Image (cartoon, rainbow, N blue to C red; front, side, top):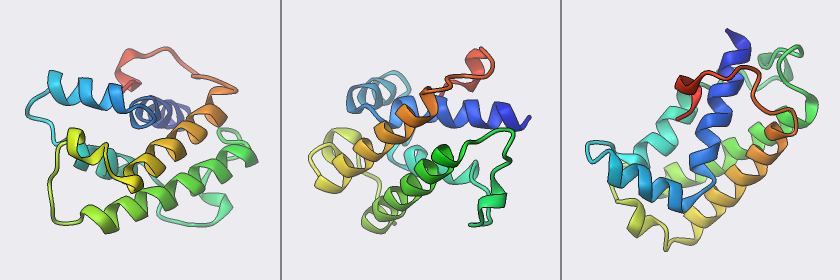
Length: 126
């Protein structure tokens, strides 16, 4: 289960790291509030503890933990900028803070992709 959680994070990051993929998701799933999903879905999978022990050593490397924690900061910035509003990705893509979020997601994805997916379950992909 812990390994699948890592895979789910990686699947999420694949969309968060790409504005074209976010736009495609928004277009293909009109009922989705992609802006909220890019924040809330990440936070739902995060451990509540900020300690290194919140990430099991058998699942995450030190480098991966640092990358995930760095992305957490980018998510917090986005949340502080959009809290209480719903904006489509086509509007957000013009905001510097959204570009920072996407770049941070790409860096985090790249770190996790060094080891790739543990399992190949399509449902783990966002």
